[in-house]
Structures are given as structure tokens and as C-alpha cells.
Image 1 (tube, rainbow, N blue to C red):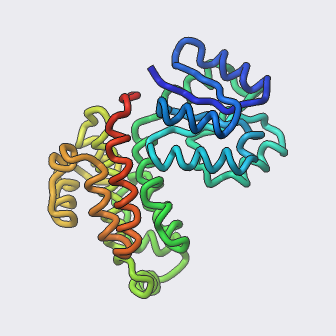
Image 2 (cartoon, rainbow, N blue to C red):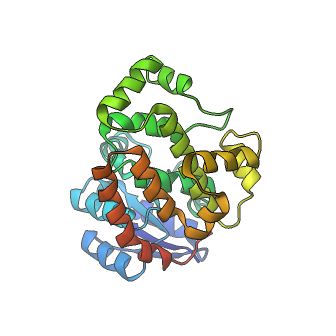
Image 3 (tube, one colour):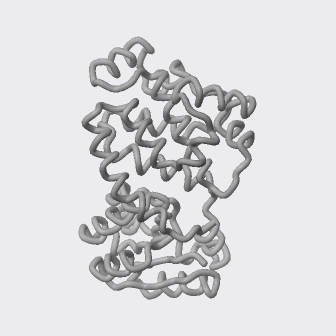
Length: 281
């Protein structure tokens, strides 16, 4: 059963959340950041729900971010009223990287339950990649990473479309990457595609041809060839060794060695912790 920790002090929001979850998941409310930290250490949550009043508090945001760093597949939701004050708070706290917003008074409890308990595997996969790569990527590179992450699979992503989305020429983008000490634009696209595929391979037995089609490949063989050409490995080996191991290689290839070492060190510390989590899907 899903484990959900909620920091929601607003009475109407907490009542809505209780009614939505019911007996469908194990829901536990905590009062503040200290209690959240204690509970999250004892039982790592599968999902976290934060109210707008709590999202406005720096210590709460810090505690949630630390928890998400330890367990990058944790789904984070914000519950709020559709009013300007709540929207302003959530905009200020946008870097919490919430999967979705739960609206009180606007949505029925059935709608909230469905969105809270049924996060799609591909959403979790891309969320995992984002939370591994973005914290150590230089600020200027984050829009390029986000573009790679949000590509909808309508054809293979290419350097021309990436450079157009950034409003620059291909040659300018290539010179920028070289000057800043990261991989070429084509390598960035390839590694981000492989990271998205590797994260999907950690989901419960997905169809590899379906993964390939979702990422814009005509067949599973095409994606297999990209694994072989770019990473010198196979999808089967990636599935067996796990996402963390592959992510370390990808980060070293994409970013500078110093940045990659910092992330790899953190990844190694949290690897055993993530391995002990109960599967939620």
C-alpha cells in the first residue's frame, strides 16, 4: 500500500485529502519539518503532499528537497485553493518540482484520489531523471535538459530542433557547449534519451518496444543500437545493473568530471536506501 506523508495545516484541504485517500493508501499527517524528517527517515514515503502555507516555509521546502534527493522517485504534490495567494506561493516554491496540483473545491475527492494514487510510470521515470541531472547541471544547460525531458516522442529529437527551441544556430549551440566544458548537443540528446529509457526500464516490466516508440524510435532495435553506440551496453544489462549505475556513466559523459563526481558520490550514498524501498507500482 502507498505511503503518503502530508504536511497540510489547512482544515479544508486536509479534510478533502482524507476523504480522497480513505483506505486506499496509508496517509499520515505531520505538523512541521522536524516531524516530517523523523517520519520520512523511519518510513520513506512514496508520495508527499504539501499545503500552500507549508510550502511558504523555508524549513519545510528544505526538508522536502532533502527527502526527494534521497529518494528521487518520490511523487510530490501540492494541495491548494484556486486563489491568487495560493498561486503566488506555489510559484515562489516552483523548484519543489511537484508532479501535480490538487485543487480543493474545484476537484471532487474521486478526481483527487485518481491523480494522487495513479502517477504514470513514465512520469515517475522522467521525474527520476530530472532530479538526478538538474541539481548538478549548470543553470544555462537546464532549459536544454528540460527540452530533452519533455520531448513527446513525435519523431527522434535532433540538434536542429533543439537549437531552434533555444533560438540559436546549431553552430552557436555547439560552440557554447564546447566552451562550457560539456558534451556536444548531439551527445546531450543521446544521453538524455538513454537516461529516460534506463529510468523506464526500472519500472515494473515495461515493454521495451513501447519504451522505444514513446521516445521516438521506430522499433526496439533502433533504441538498442543507440545503447550500443553511445553507451557500449545493452538494455538488458542496464535493467540488471540498475538505473544508478547507468546514471553515473551518463553524468560523467555529459558534464564536467568534477560535477559528475559530486553527483556520483551522492548517488552511491543513497543507492542502498533506494534499494530498500517497497515498490509502489
